[in-house]
View 1 (cartoon, one colour):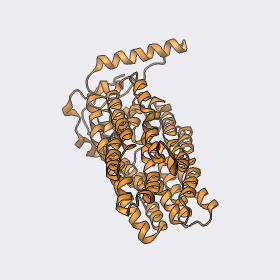
View 2 (cartoon, helix red, strand yellow):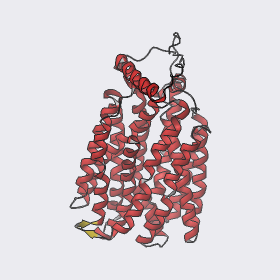
View 3 (cartoon, one colour):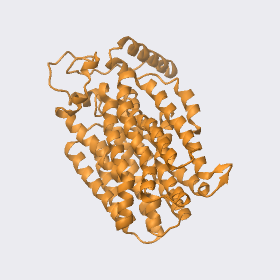
View 4 (cartoon, helix red, strand yellow):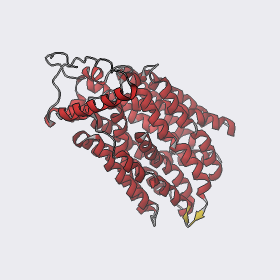
Length: 443
């Protein structure tokens, strides 16, 4: 729950961009470049946050980085609420995005390192169900606040709300334990053993039953003991390279397609002739599919291979996108929009499950940060490219671009993606090691 609430605020910041653009465009008379900059600023910040702070989490630990990235997000999201002009607002959203990007890289890695294989996907899905509640929340409160004024303009209250819960979350997150897998990966074996012993004792006392035997894991190489063992270049060798292609496609090409729909939905609806209030309300109806999709992903996580789910839901989202782009009438557009929100977020939750499983512990947040951050860098282009295409060719062209990207991603994942469902992290990542002399099995 503590991790999922943090994810809520990260996605709140992402989805807020489209609402701010729709509200401030006419209010501040923004041109296309200024509107695109407002949306893109948070994505650019997420790129730097995921890439740099994600790598730092592999060096200083998961728990400490959770506190650092939330502090960055809290402060600059609050400052943004009082921005006197567009470019101060853009700068604040960029820095807030650095904290949000680091959070995104940490969440799946941290959860995967704690949760057993048979429940790992389900609990990551629950966390992202909380995260995707941000979209219906921002669209539902965005419509009535858009034209309101109470002490400050309504859009400023949206930013205040975005930072409101972080102080309490920072306090509660102080009690999060460090990842035992990370402690072991950097040679702090005594601390890892003490933490695991404490957890085992608490579980045994709460259930009144002895714990089951520890499963045996076969290691093909000695555990990492030093910084020189964890090189970013290792991610591009042999089997790991296939995982990087699959995860990279899901977090880059797929992100372009995903945010081509979600962040530009109010503008796409406006292009179809709906006014601001109607487009925000329609977007809110569509947004209900976001948390429902994530919750469905949690329910089916252990039943179906995650690679297959990522491929099938990507193709399903592409089909729904065609109905959204070429559909006529409010009912069809809302139904197609709901299907996009539902299917794309079954997929997005599955991507976070999948991406957390295919990389070794010592480089897990580095790899996720690299893939996720690159995706956010690509997402910087979405408002510029999307709005330019929208202005010159119409909303259906934007939709067709997103559909094409979904299809290409599905093909790449089918060719290169490893299977992960129900397997231990060690078993999955053993396939990615360069060959080395075998050592005795270790528990």
